[in-house]
Image 1 (tube, rainbow, N blue to C red):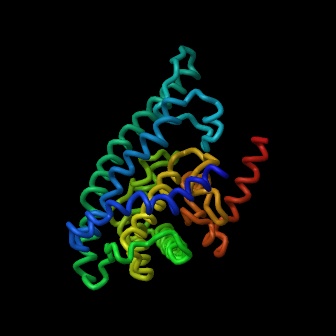
Image 2 (cartoon, rainbow, N blue to C red):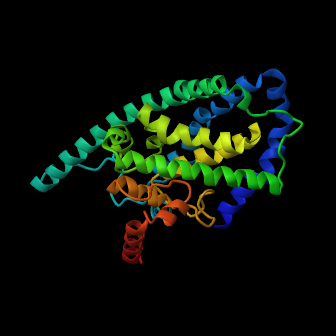
Image 3 (cartoon, rainbow, N blue to C red):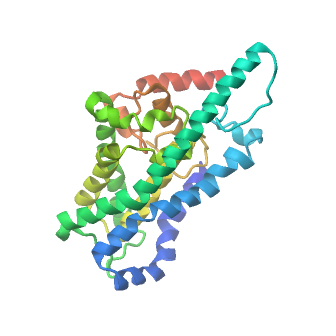
Length: 307
């Protein structure tokens, strides 16, 4: 939609101008190795910001606003929603089932918080540090001299990063489903059948290493972007990942308005049936390899019922 396109335009055209005056503090005060580790630490504060701005309003503040809730993907109520208890036998069974669902949700939430804290504050910085040690000559530039400004070249860089990263994610994600020896780690992420934003980083470390870290490292090693281009791409990647698991298919999402962008409901479908739609940010590779056919049929039926 138009609002989504405007958000993307701000990300591409305005963000460089906002960041550039402060970029010298990074290039002057930190080595490239330190700056690269620091760059990836943005995940934690950005996730908190996203939760406050994009997730908490529809989950709680606007949960009774029909105009907002019409975009909720699952027809099931949120596990944290409370309802009045009723005394008849059928209602008692429903109440017991809802209570068990809430208990499971809070157990998952506690586990998600632990995984998020470990991943964002320990695992990711450690992996980036190891990467800079293993490939010391491949540490990205943080210089002001080659700071990227909006241009065809910078657009090509970001587009290349998106296509390569999504290709790597598609195949590592698909392999995690094909082989039981790998799926035993990936099934941790699938503990959520109805996504909320906490499920975005709900990964076993082995799964994270294979399906998240590997595509990211592959992309940076092939494209070799400037540090700011990596920051831009990282913000888009995080936004798309959080939006994947938000549980709402908002038409104004900044990462869903352009051709080949994967719908939020595609990843929700993947979680609910545990098959197909192995891409995340783009639908390109699912279309190329024919792994979105069942989803497309499901989507047609779903929206025909809504209409």
